[in-house]
Image (cartoon, rainbow, N blue to C red; front, side, top):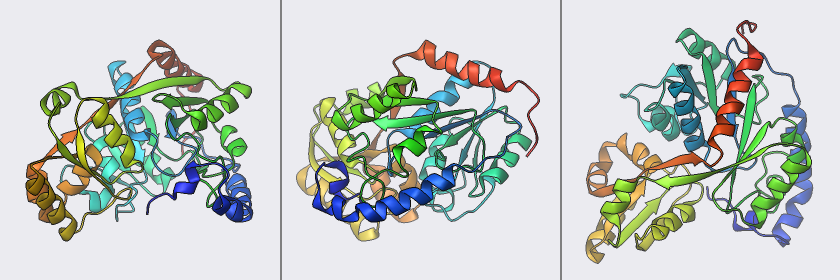
Length: 340
C-alpha cells in the first residue's frame, strides 16, 4: 500500500473529511501508548518515528549499534519483522529470507545479532539469554509493553510529519502530544522542510533535544555509477527519496519505478524491469532493502544478477552529543534491573 498523497499536503478535503475518524483512532492510540511497560534486564534503546512509513529508522538503529559495539558493548536488535511470516522469537540467520523474517531484520543481522518477535517481551528475553547487554528496538515507539531507557523519534527532513493529522486523515501513528510524552530525543534526517520544522519546533517547546543526521550513499558505488543512466526501482516508504539521492550524486535516474513499501515483486514485474532496462540501455539499481527482499526469491535470480545496489549509512552531525546520550542512558540503568 502506498501512502496517500494528501497525507503530505496541507488543506486537503480528504484529510478534513477523515479527521473525525482520525480523532477517534488517535484517542485509542494515545490510551494504548500510556500503558505502563515492563523493565528489561538490560538497557533498551528504541528507534521509532511519529508517522507511518519510513524515516530512516533502520540506518539509525545500525549507526547506534556500531557506536555501542565500538565502545565494547554487545547490542542486539529487536524487530517485529514486518512482512515476515515467523512470529518468533527467533534469531535471524543467513538461511532466513525476507518471507520469513522481513527485509529490515536481514539488514540489521549483518551488523549485530537480531531477534524477530511479535511479542516484544519474549523478544527481549531471547536477546538477553543470547548475551545482549543492550537492546536496540527497530520501531516500537508506540508499543508500551517494554519500558524504554532511551526513545529516539526519527523524522525525515523532506516529509516531516506531513499534514500533522492522525491516521487515516494523516500519517501520524498517534497524536503528536501523546508520542512526545514517550520521546527522549528527535533525530532529523536530511535537510529540513516545512513539515519537518513543525516537529522540530514541537520538540524544542517540550525541551526535547534535536539531533541531525544525514544518509550518505556508499562512495565506491557512487563512483561506479556516476554519470551512468539507470533504471531505478524501489519498494520502500518513500521511493522518491531514493531517486533524489541518485540524482544528487550524479546518477541520472532516466526511468523510475516506485513500488509500495515492503513490496514483494511478482514475476511479471521483475520481467518488465529487466526488459525495460535492456531496451533502453540502462543499468538497473535499487536499495539495500529491496535487494534483501529479492535475495530470498529464487525467481529473482536474473534481476539480482543485473541490479546494482546503493547502500546508505547514517552519519550523526553531533556525534559526541549522541555518544554522550547513549552513555547516560546506560548509566542511569546501572546493573541491577528487574527481570522480565
